[in-house]
Length: 469
Image (cartoon, rainbow, N blue to C red):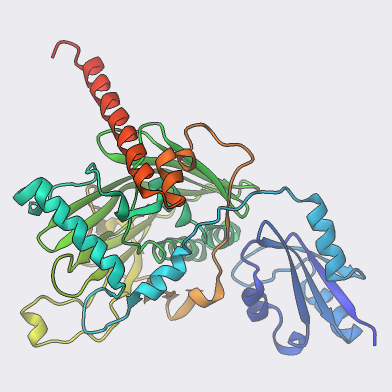
């Protein structure tokens, strides 16, 4: 029996197996067998084989030079092929650039799935890792001894030197990069959309896919001024640099190999404490810009940890998320955990959604007043919803009941080292290297040296700025 094959050249990053099966191998083409050849963990060529030649010819006539999807306008080179998948993959391997992957000891996206439980009776995801909770209790006792009642006044603790056992095995910059490991899927999709609403939906989907892997409860290593990090995520390159000493500010710039889109901006991270909770905020401006001139501004929600000392430990995003389409004057206004009720009202009303639920609308941006200092954005009356948004930030997002992201359909794209590293790269920090090797004693010593150098640097900058004081 003759096998007839179709070769799709240079498919887009989002054309993974689940997408192709839903969009292409359906109906009369459902018998087709698909092989996706990868380069740097992203699709490079796709071989589809049919047993019957008439199906092969029909497929070629149906898709070659035409749109693959009625919502995304793009064309691909599709041709008949006599080579096997093994031969094609071998050719790809001979010509590909070798990048060394980051091998994190902890697979963080699996970690949080094991550490949290959904509990509709409580706002926020329930944290069930008892060993990790004990570390936080221990740290809080350390902070109480060091700061006393000042700890409970909502003041920032971002510059506090924490005990080494609480730390993550990544820097702040590495965490920020890690959160972009789905970016090539959604941003490449958005870059191909001609319809403004469809493009906007994929930008919003990128943000919520980004949020779903940020739920760690460990402390990343705080960068010093001038510390950098650079990495590759599939065909997406990202550069990050810490630029201030008084607050933790990461400036970032990233783009795909074909320059179809770029991201840039800055993010200021802060952590403050109350008697039984911690509030973490990420303010700043996160821009996404596409080759066609469309531009978007993303504002992230705050995060709250409750039950630090007593009671159940919960993690939740609070306040609002806003995403602006700056070219078309549109705004996505989304409430996180919208049906949360207060303590006294909770005696009379029960929530009927899971604690990771969100809902919102795409509306004209003139109806939204943005809070520049946080996430307490205000929605003015009289708006008209152009599209309904809802989902669960741990797993999915829907627009007018149509799903655009489901966690089961996507695997995180690996992060790769560059062939070279700047001396300022955070992966070269001696305290982080020692901590990764499980030498906590040496890591603590190295961390204190770096913090002392950073303190001297701050004082020198102050003296330079105010020489007569």
